[in-house]
Image 1 (cartoon, rainbow, N blue to C red):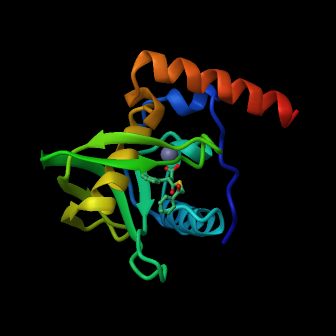
Image 2 (cartoon, rainbow, N blue to C red; image 1 turned 60 degrees about the horizontal axis):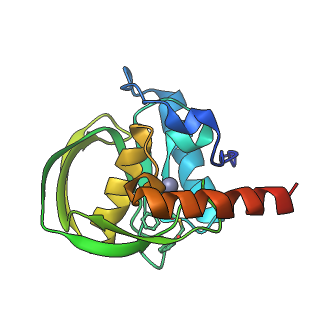
Length: 167
Ligand code: K1U
Ligand code: ZN
């Protein structure tokens, strides 16, 4: 097992569109294991391969308090969504920034697991938010892209200041 380095905004790799996984082999299973380890280490509830510089359609989530509900999604497709909810989001690739984002209340997702088996999951609440957040990462989209142009501008200024402070 190995911890992977998480890329931070504005790294251009975060804007790449992930490509489907062709074969679920030992390398992919190792990637999924490392992604769970990295996500738990950083106190995250989700992590997309894009965030560690790997341009493949893979993300992991676990919104449980006990870290006992890990789910890996390979080549996911959101096949249904409905309703609306507004929840505060953060992102391991945009540290120090939190914002209320509107997302669907319910999603139905089809994907492959680490064993290459197709599964369908239905999610509400925080799990639905997390799945949509990670799915966006695979499309090169960040949660701050959902903000109004004005709010995004203000955030960009804050991020620049934070970046200078940490140099
Ligand atoms: O993709 C990521 O950067 C992980 C991100 C996922 C996420 C958080 C909050 C709402 C939607 C998606 C995080 O885990 S950031 C960590 C965090 O802020 C958080 C942790 C536990 C519960 C709620 C938020
Ligand atoms: Zn994120």
